[in-house]
Length: 357
Image (cartoon, rainbow, N blue to C red):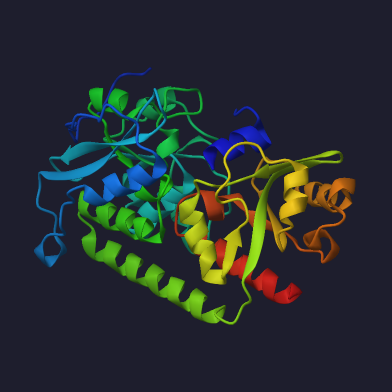
């Protein structure tokens, strides 16, 4: 979805070397070949994971298999991270990652956050306001390193040497900064990867009891949503990346398996989940999904104008979604923040579908 945000809506996104040593990392050798998304999912299942310690306490040193993002192929490869103790200074590369840390009672350890693309829930607004904002959009490596973190964690595709990237895993590790890529931000991820992320954060920061409580509450919420919408008819949809008065960009989301499984709680499926590359307006019309969704985010195009453009596009007038007024706005941070807000987004969409069915 990061590529979606850059290509479909932004089209372009907007070294202090002093580092506080708190963690060290050691790497495994990266495979020479670049696995496909399905191969990545298989590889991650084979990774040896550290088990929760008895009594919910972490025994250090703690070694976890996490990931590196290959600069050459853009694929995720296994890489070990070792923690001699709980990190004391954390940079979260997205708002959603910081919100998880707050829920785990780690607010005071978060020394930087970026990518503020959504609203913060009222009950954590006060602690969130205490966290230094490195950038309201995606943050670069210089500002990240300048915050002197022990660990940088969050969305995987932001670990890159670009003006929008926090730096590669290797380059941060070389500065004695540990990294943690969220499992659920990789191709092939599913809802259980969100729970795994929270559990592993609980291990890293020795707050396993709080992590388990959060995971259990989210698992229950998923069950509640599935039960609530169990009577829904099966429907298809398509993601709209952007729209103007005379054009429309369709986003296939074929790698967004985490979002797809969450949406399946509503018994809806992505019409273009098996499609790679560009999708034309003609293909969209031919597929004729039951409804369309377009995401809204802070700093983005006027969302109401975008929806108006979709409804008025001459090429789309034969579509059921246009005739039945089924173009729905979803929150970017809910679906592509890779946090627990995925359930907020799914539930809100479910409510909108119920109103129009």
